[in-house]
Image (cartoon, rainbow, N blue to C red; front, side):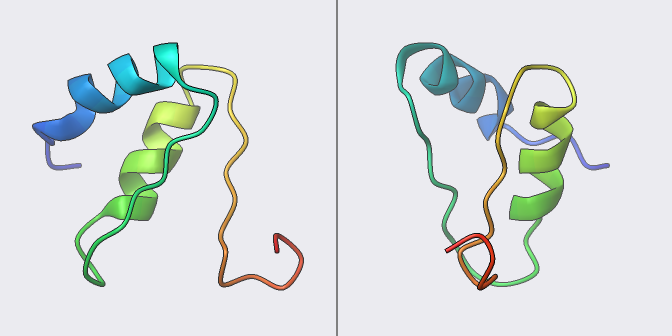
Length: 54
């Protein structure tokens, strides 16, 4: 996986906020980043394009 500059900022936000949304253009690694962070901390990943998650 490509190392993302926002990873450390995202982890800090997750420490202080109950929810964080990753938004941006398609195919830039948002899901990959979210799932890799979720591997290292208690997390719930929701995909709002999924009917089950909505």
